[in-house]
Structures are given as C-alpha cells and as structure tokens.
Length: 300
Image 1 (cartoon, rainbow, N blue to C red):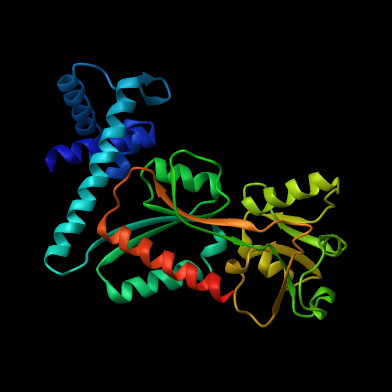
Image 2 (tube, rainbow, N blue to C red; image 1 turned 180 degrees about the horizontal axis):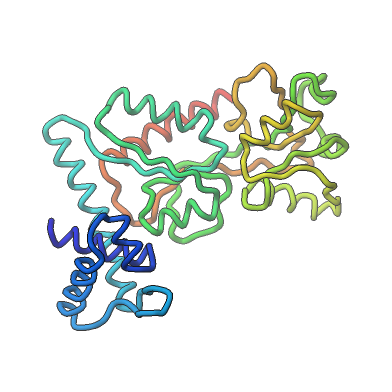
C-alpha cells in the first residue's frame, strides 16, 4: 500500500503540473514529494518528468507510468469494494460525471435511492458536459458518465442510451404555453431566446439544425448554466431549450417538445471507460441507473 501511495503522488504531480501545487493538495512537504519522484526515477532508471520553467510535465516514460498508476488505483478500489462485499457490507465510492440536464432530478434521486440501501457508499458527482465527461472517464476521474450526445470516442463503452426530445421551456403564462403538443422551432424563435452557450451539447445541436435550414439565430441571452436559464424564463417572456430530464416539476414552468421536423431528439448516454473493471459499488449503481432510466423512458 505504501508503494501505491507513492504512485498516487506521481499522478497528482502530473495532474497539478508542479511539485508545489501537488504538495499543497496532498498536504505534504515539497521536499518529501521531490524525494519520492527521485526514488521512482532511480528505480525505473529514467526520468519521468520534463523539468520546465513553469512546472513539470510528463515525458513519454511518465505517460506510460501514470497510465499504469491509474489502472492500479482503479483496480485497488474495485478489490476493496469486493472485499467489503465478502462481509455483506457494501462499501466503496462512486464517481459520476454528468451533464447539467441530469443534476436537477435524475441524479439526486438515484443517489438517494442507492444510499438508502448502501449508506456507506460515498459519491462524487462532477458536472461535466459531453466532451469533458468523456475526458473524466479517460483520466480515471470518473467511473461513469451520464451525458447528452458525447463526441464519438473509442474509449467510451455505452451501458445505456435513449433519445430525448428538446423542449421549449417557458413560464406558464407565456403565449406558447396556451397550447399543448409539439411546437415549431420558428414559433420559438419569434420570441426572445434564453439559450445554453456553446460549451453545452444542447446549443451545438440547435446550431447544427439551424445551419441545415439556413436560419439565423437572433440576439438573446446565453449561459453555461441551465439553472440560470430556467430562472430567467420565469422572469421574462423568453423561451429556453432543455431536455425533459432537466425540467423540474414546477407549476410556474411550462414545456412543449420541439417538432421533430425541426429538431431531432438528442441522445442520452450512460457510459464507462472501455476495458475498465468497475468497483462493485460503481457497477451496482450503473445497474440501478440503467434500470431506472429505462423505466423513466418507458413512462415518458
């Protein structure tokens, strides 16, 4: 275990980019951390970092070592979880990266349900959008990712996927809320728009559809926060775009799906890093989440 702690320190230096920042995060002396790096390099017979004026960067040997370190730490967590299972007590930790669309209801409800059964399992929930969530998997910062339309990646193993329509979101007294059923995109664009910015998959999906139709997007409000956009439409005659899973059960809000002739549904994916063996806790949570998402989708 001592050797594992040393390897974890190496991984933290690689992540932080400097001995000083890594030492602060690990709460150890920089000199002690420097000695650990020197010991590892002596044992391997080669440097693993490039020493730069602005910090430290892994060289090719270091990249190979850190990949090994992350594999070993992930395997250790999985074994710890399996050992705990032998005594009938489910322990462990689950790291989840998820799009903002799922932090309002879906993820809190699922974490609560899991922890009611296994209260000694801890969770880390990172709000990451499509590109960043996949990066969190490959960096071993997350066990699972629940995202909208992640980019194609050979590293992503899909555990569950479904399609969700984009919905026009407005306050209950908005003119578009007077009717039910699908709404045409052109009718939404006739009003002030409160849209996710380009860091979010929803905006990219919208812009691709508008580009195919040659329709310009007028001025409005944009934000990287879906919560801000929901609060804004409560205060003015604006229309936002969000998926059903991200729309809270609030009588002050109304939503209508965008007509499929104007916008294709978005793909929601639950995935993990390809080839990675999940801990028992993470695997059980993935099973629970898969079944729950399937039920939600059938109910919708």
